[in-house]
Amino acid sequence: MRKFFTVIGGMGSLATESYIHLLNERTPSKKDQDYLDYILVNHSTVPDRTAHILDHSKPSFLPPLVEDIKQQSLLKPEFMVMICNTAHYYYKELQAATDIPLIHMPHMTVSVMKDKYPNAKKIGLIATKGTIADHIYEDEIKEAGFEFSMGDQEIRDQVESLIYDDIKIKGKVDAAKYYDILKTMHDKFECDVIVLGCTELSYAQEKAPDHPYNVADGQSIIVDKSIELGQKIRRGEKIDYTQIYK
Image (cartoon, rainbow, N blue to C red; front, top):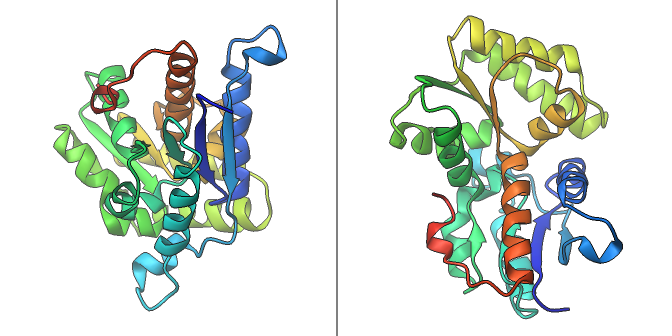
């Protein structure tokens, strides 16, 4: 197979399944051959990202992801996407392990959000403790010129419960809890847009999209970018990967 891309996933598998479902659903197609060519690496045994970020004595997720990146690089994909926001903690180290472009999901999310909501003033972030601790999204949002809020401890605990208790453990979305989180971020913390800084939250958005709040969904955004780039490489177009976030 030539002119394909690689998806580094499995963190977690339901979120990766959501990415693949949206990718195939949104790809314009009338026959089998219209779909995109890609390889999925569903590496579900990668150590917990948040646990390591909060306590570096816990197993690191960097070595297995570097191994994945290097293995896939031997196959020469055109680009790679990594379906986990928190894993971007080691983005620089992962990109340094290969010459293949690795798309930066948090950076892309904020770039697209800035274009889509130019009048927004305050941006909320809901995410894992790891993503909050590593400041990936916080730095991107502030650099883009927005005010920023992560809510309070009560809302962060609700987010953790939705991600871990409901989606990762039970394999289902508590829609009422998800809606309450968005409502609180909008009403109490006055956020014009809420960034879904975890792919499990993207899974929640896919399963429970019926709400009135503006969200910036990194997984949905990278799905669209994957389709755009995948179609370009199929047509043989040369891509300037330094410009894809603009």
